[in-house]
Image 1 (spheres, rainbow, N blue to C red):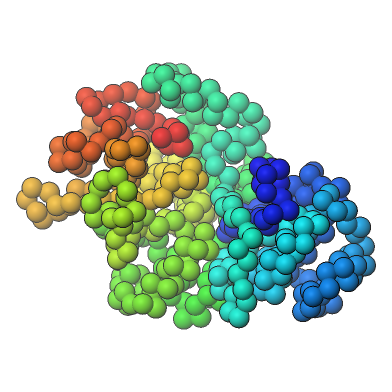
Image 2: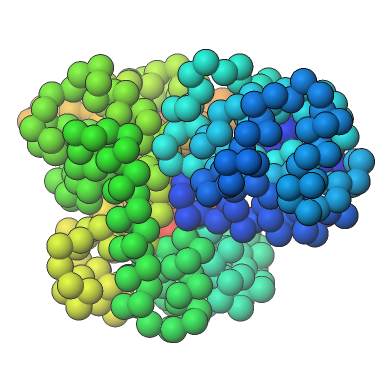
Length: 432
């Protein structure tokens, strides 16, 4: 955001995208307070009609700014003030006005938008090209450590990663922090609840409220309830170990253009992450992306843990108990898979996976994630416990040896090598 202000402020507006309750409004308001002499924040989700009506006619910007200052009681200073359009998708005319406001050049403009896709409310308006976009994810593991008072964060861990050495005694404590992060998640309200109450049941209540909010938004997206059912079925789909999200088993309906649109809108809402099957595992993964085969993950693993046992009381959520005691059973390993998906996305990676038939042809090998690095690819397998068997990784590397740089197993133990396979603790995911 600072880079935008210093290099592009006055030439482009800044649009911060992200899921609901991810902290966009708080972040933008704090930024405006810190970086500008004054600012006006208009929250279009509850703005007065008189304020919204200002955007009906912006032909005379001098008059527009005079009325805006009069209605908000805030004095604007040329090139020293910012105007924030919060939940801008609720007022399409304001977003269209960005083109002319930026061209005027007097002030900086920051927009935020969330769930009910920003693209949903754009009928009949001109989308401004004078707009840079940034994505706000839930707090990542390092930011969670900062929030809990660990100011060193991952700085020391990067040294171990770069030098390819085990953490030794520090590994156990780092994994304990990571498991806590998995349970709390990175939604700011959930993190605040943990810091305030030091009670995971209170955290779970906050997460349930966020999920219910998402559910309400999904019903606005799709009154038939299909998007809500697709979302709530994510844990069961990952637990089934299917090679793709099986739509028919979630909503008793086959893939159609309407379903494709619903899934696309769910992805744009940033509540979920999609991993697409790669038909040819090679550099330029996007060129080999299957639009028909994908896996679906929840963008915040803390919400995933709560959703996995949505119909049970907090005390019956065995993921909490097993993670806290470091005894997560193998059939709950999909929690770590969801976490790795979240960490890779927060690091700016698109998600791809690959399946191919075994020698007998009756089952499939699966590479959980593929990364493109230079002119090579990095296959990743995720395990919740041991490392002794990684048949899929071995078979894949035998088949595509010329394309591979490093072969990575992400798991819960300390760093080590198993032949050509690099076994990394999951907290190194963001450094890959």
